[in-house]
Amino acid sequence: MKKQRIVVGLSGGVDSAVTAHLLKQQGHEVVGIFMKNWEDDDDSEYCSSNIDFVDAASVADVLGIEIEHVNFAADYKDRVFAEFLREYQAGRTPNPDVLCNAEIKFKAFLDHAMRLGAEKIATGHYARVRLNEATGRHELLKGLDPAKDQSYFLHRLNQAQLSKTLFPVGELHKTEVRRIADEIGLPNAKKKDSTGICFIGERPFREFLNRYISKEPGPIKDERGRTLGQHQGLSFYTLGQRQGLGIGGIKARGAQRGAGDHSPWFVARKDMPSNTLWVVQGHDHPWLLSSGLTADDASWVAGEAPALVECGAKTRYRQADAPCRLDGGAGEAFRLDFADPQWAVTPGQSAVLYDGEVCLGGGVISGAISAI
Image (cartoon, rainbow, N blue to C red; front, side, top):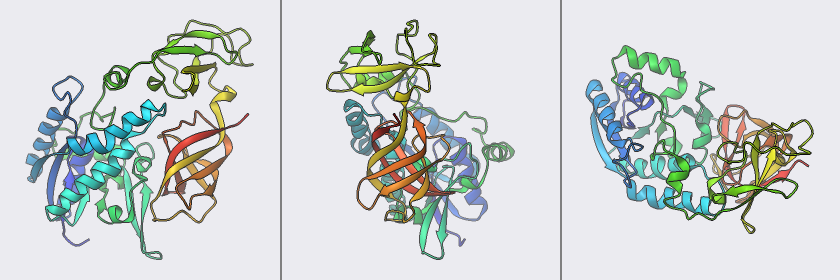
């Protein structure tokens, strides 16, 4: 690759730090940008942006590169957080990381980098980009470390975005990234990976959401229609949820065969009109299994729906690709029919399609098709 001016999103974490190092080693002109995207409580114990910026600045100092602090908080609130709250209020479970990548990291950040004269941007995501010589299109590939692959969160990226993007650590395993960071003396070499809501951090989720969404308590019922307790508001629960139901000590007579009286309870359905939370006992209860799904708001990496019918799909991150059949996709909506029933298919989450290591794109799950 010819030497280029590359702007790297430095988050304060080890992955983006090693990304900047690798590009500098290749002779590129590297500039770091730290994105601040959340301001509501940036002095709290849960928002680590101030600490992260200190870490990012320390990395830039060690690597000998410039770093700029950029505030995208208004963009984040308008484009990501507002949609995040709308989805929760509608009873769905959104994936903020998917929206954050599409709207902030590869839109607001990319636009800013281009204004700085960048030829490319780079982030610490575990994914890869490849130019398909036959089609002239850029392909989004899984990262080589299967335990860290983040292509699921990047599936809404388009050709224009991918053509300007590099993912250097996508070619490496996490252990190698840590080793490189330690070897060159990066101050964050042993810093733990961030989790929690994109840019908002790790925090008690229900308590956080309660600041923005009003509570509407209602009944928790089992499959026989018996009331087992009271929920705090349907927005605070997601399908497949096991913890925090407050009914752990309740046993069900006549429970699903094989579940046993002591099996845990899981959220199986959310009935918004009646404000009822339905729960079932046992991980493999039929109510938790789906033979297919419908999705809308489709986005395809190639710019158009894939021609193939048989593919693999993930309905949640860290899930093995499930063999399925794609129906539709030419418009905004599509349907997937799975070879084997899938567990806790959740509206609001992303259904992401793959052809082997190639991420094709996906859509937002609008409904699950019961396996019963």
